Image (cartoon, rainbow, N blue to C red; front, side):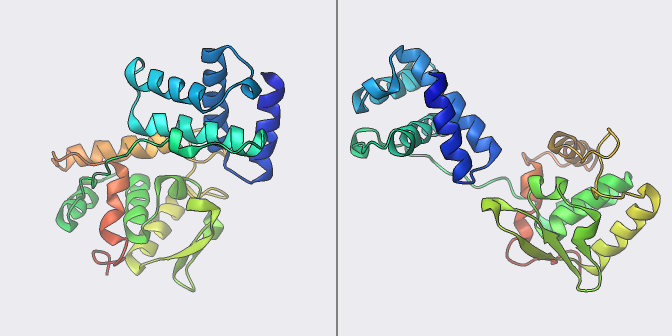
Length: 238
């Protein structure tokens, strides 16, 4: 098992896939090999089908989790083992995509108004104003803020692509106030450990706290803060 997993890890690395994808794929393949108790080379579509049925009927895993197992096994056989599978025999589960509970402009404004923690306010306003994802806001560096061009550099965003996002005047003023008080040197939003970046969990907890303080009861996560501005950034911040 170790040899095939090492080969798969090398294949993932050569394709530049993320560390998160690498971890997910290797763990799913380990589970498959442990469940079957047979070498990967000796198995085919029928073994994969039985494993996926086990995940659905006995483990009761979510659609997204089962589909990650499916993708990991497809990668194993198509890339690492260089075998052509009949994908009609191992289809992915249909996933129902639901729209997130999007906050209104007024609700987001209430969160900003009640947020008395300057660092949290700077984070939330930057997520909203620039339309940043959670993973993107936590990885921002001081040097990514371009006040002359009024833009924010997003390094290795979704899909590993670099891009620029808009920086509003109000967002810039809040960031300047934040910088004067906290004096970050490398990571724009530092974590509790010196020289470390803030964790995604800390940002999520901050949003939950100030959402409750603002007495907003509708279900919403930190990810929904950016949705109102995906296509018309700065509606609130102008």
